[in-house]
Length: 427
Image (cartoon, rainbow, N blue to C red; front, side, top):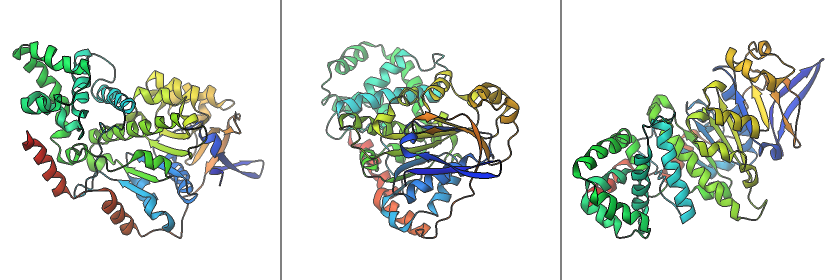
């Protein structure tokens, strides 16, 4: 099908389906509304339609309910297309290495994203917690770890500053003069006192993730279990369960940021391909403000030409940084609002004219207002009601699906921990 059903409009006794064409989805969709108003149900319905219609898609869920719902409705014919990334499955961790790059351009992008991720987690308001010196250390350390035929992971960055043998071994593979100068010049000439003072501050930012076995076993693996290029080109289904209740809020944000960065890196590679040669891919991100860096905001204006349709949702518009608010209102084709808080209703009322802030503040559950991108043009705002959850009678067995994705993409915990221990002892 060339569209997804969003809901229906009822006007003067006439019911009309609300459909979003696939070509218009490449101009993106933003959905907002208070918790419990129907956002996740609508997103899950759209995602299931993509799955049934043999589309490539990724759904990143920080709550877990939507992923659980989708897993019980995967068509049998798409069993082998599904990749379930579930960090709470601690006995079968999948590798997620932000620093694994296939070329120099991708390497530079991922290192820049790594720095943005640390800003996002520890200094979102840019108050100097993550400053130029931290950036300098992190950039050079990441490039050092990535050097050589075996590459490296985030888990190895602190080791560079605490294990001289490891540092020297990695430096043997560095070809960048500036990175070599960082070690042989700046670091060699820094007094031990100042080096120690900075080191404690630097390594403390890694402590939460490396002291947590669940997260360490994921980001410590050198090879990604998921080939993001193949997911995009092969029209696969990537379901990401980042339930904060199961893995913790910080781990959920951190892993979500890495996943989105890896997907962006894969999408950007499409720039080198002939126009319209790549199949469309649809990305759904709930509570996206926690999963995206500033790079993502700028990418909204460009990703259409790469065949990426982005669907974003969150509860409060006012919780978004100003640059992200501007990116959404300037680059997103379809805007949909369930019941809003008073502040958001006042701020967004002009976007949903002729409806007022009072209208936006008093919608019943599953009712919404929408400005729909239709054949490249944005319609005036109108009202709609979302559909009940879609059912699929030809679904895979839930346990079979989970077992298949474990066997295909995960590694036993004992084996992963053994390999990580060997790395520690190697130098």
